[in-house]
Image (cartoon, rainbow, N blue to C red; front, side, top):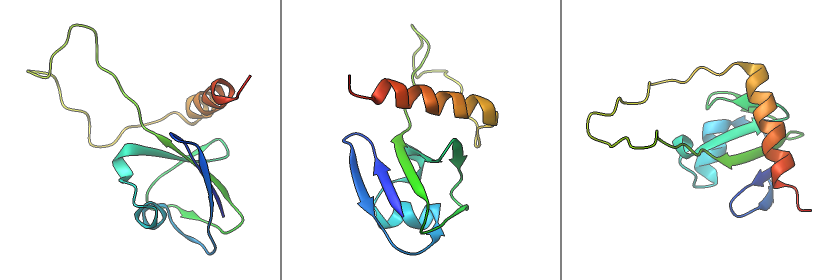
Length: 101
């Protein structure tokens, strides 16, 4: 499989199929720090990626509200719910922005 990593951009070729969590462990990447994408699909840690797949691993970036502090800030929910079309749009937008001009 072809794995495209961002920040810095590099590509890795791996053989065989495996679960996303196994792939991340093999690449020494903490699962909570990245988004794993196949096409326009956001993958979960338990999904299997095939040898023929092209996978993109992007850093998960988040920010807080202006003027907020860590004191008294609500904790993030255990699991985020993503609307699939919104994820696809976000992935396409991020790819357009990442293209060199």
